[in-house]
Image 1 (spheres, rainbow, N blue to C red):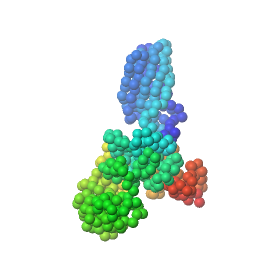
Image 2: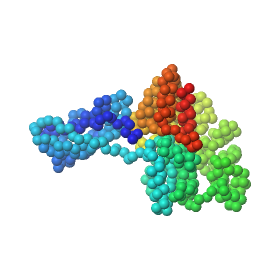
Image 3: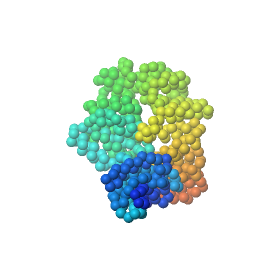
Image 4: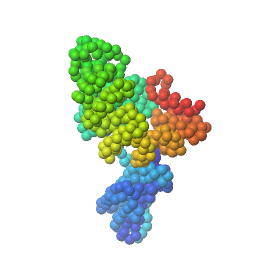
Amino acid sequence: MWWMALAFAEAPRVEVRWRGPEGTLHVVPPAGAKVSGDAPVDVALVVGDRPRAFGVDGDFLHGGLPLGDVRDTSVEGTVDLQICEDDTGICRPETLRVAGRVPATKKGTAVLGVELGSHEAPSPFNADAAPVADAAFAAARASGGRVLLDFSAVWCPPCNLLAAEVLHADDAETALEGLHVAVVDVDHPSSWTLKDQYAVGSYPTVVVTDADGEEIDRVVGYPGREPFLAFLAGARGERRDWAALDPSTLSPDDAATGLVRLLDSDADLGPWLAASAASDTADAHLGRFRHAPTADGLSWLVEHHPERSLEWVPFVGDWLEGPGREPFLAALPAILASVRPGEAADVLWFAAQLHEGAESRALFASAASILSASLTGDFAADRGYLEFLATLLDRSGEVDAAIALLDRTAREHPDEPTFFLAAASHLNEHERYAEALRRAELAMRTAWGDNRLRVATEAATALMGLDRADEARSLARKTLEEVPAPDAALKVRTHRYREKLAKLTE
C-alpha cells in the first residue's frame, strides 16, 4: 500500500544484551537510518512476569534501557519510536512488537523477533472507492438512513478542515446521526465512476443521497463548521429540487433560500429574484448581492452578517476590483473582527489582491501572522491551514520560510506527497529548479493516481528549467503510461492533469 512506500527494506533490530544480572534493551536501526534523538520513545515490556515501562527521548536508547536480570527469561511487548532516513531527514513513527527469550548463559546478546505494527488509523486515501461506497449504501438500506459521499483529496486544505471540524470532531456522532459516511479519494482511479455520476468537478464536494443513490442535496467547498452543520440538518429533511420548482408558488423567504441554492447553477434567476423581492432574510440580501453587487448591499451584509462574508467575497471579484474596492476596504475591519482566524486570513488574501507591491505584501504578511498564531500544534486540526500559510508567506516575500514550513511538515508526515509537492510548486514558480526537482522526487515516492500526475508535472517542469529536456519528456511519457487513464466519456479532472503533463512530452 502507498503508506508503506517509505518503509525501510528491513525492520529495526531489537536486542537484549546482558552480563550477569544486568540486562539492557537496544534498538539497532536499519542501514541508512537512525533513531530520532529528539522524538519520544515509549517502551512497554513484560520481562518474565515483571512489567518494565519507559518514556524517554531517543537519545537515551544509545546506552540501552535497563531491564535487570533477564537470564532464562521471556521478553515481549512494544517499542514506539521514530526512525529517520539519513539522506533525507524524513522521520516516520513505528510501533515495534517484540518477543523472544533470553538463554540462561552468563552473558550474551539475544535478538528479539520484531513485527511492525500500525501506528495510526488506516488512511481513507489511496483506497478503492467502490467497497467504501457500497458499504455506506448497504448500511443506509439496512437502517433507513442516508449516505454522505465526501469527495475529498489528501492534499486539499478545505477537505482537511471538513474532516477535522466535522467528520472527526468530538461531536461527530451527533452531527452525522442518520448519515453513513463514505470518503471517496478523488485521486484514486476507482473514484472516476462516482465523480462522473454525481458531476463532481471541485473538492470537497459533499453529496447526500438516499439509500438508492438518489441525490438529496450537495455542498461544494467547505463553508465553515456552522454553515456545514446547517447543510446537514437540511439534507436530513425532504428533498427539494429547487430547479424544478416554480418560485412564484413559494413564500418570499423560501424563494430567497432557493435563490441562494441556485446561484451557481444554470437556472434563470430572474423569477427567483422577483419572488424573493419582499424578503428581508440574510439569504435574500446575499442572493441579491451575489447576483448584482452594490455598495448598499455590501453595507447591509457587513452590518448584519459580517460572519458570512466568505459566502460572497470570493464570488464578486470583478466588482471588488472596480467600484466595490473602496467600500470593501472600508468594511474590512468590521469583517475581520467578526470571523475566525482562518477566515480572516482568507479575507485578507482577497484584500491583498486589490493592492500591489509593498502594500500587497504587507497584507499577505498580516494574513500569515494571524493564521500562524491560530495554529494549535495538533496536525489534524492544523493541516488544512499549512499549505495556505506557506502560500501567504511566499506572497509576503518570505519564500524560504514557506519552503521551510513545507519541508518540516513533509518530514514529520512522510506518508503522503502533499507538502513536498507544494514545495516543488513554489520553488518552480521562483525558478529554483534544482530544489524543486528534489522535492518532486521525494513527493513521487508516495504519490498515486491524479496526484502522481501533478508531481510528475512539477518534476518535468523543473527538469526543463535545468535544461534537461530529454529527461523531462521521458519522465512525462513514463508517468502517462503507468498511471491509469479514464475513459474519454467520463467527466473527471484526470483528463486535465494528463493534458498538462502531456504538453511536457512535446
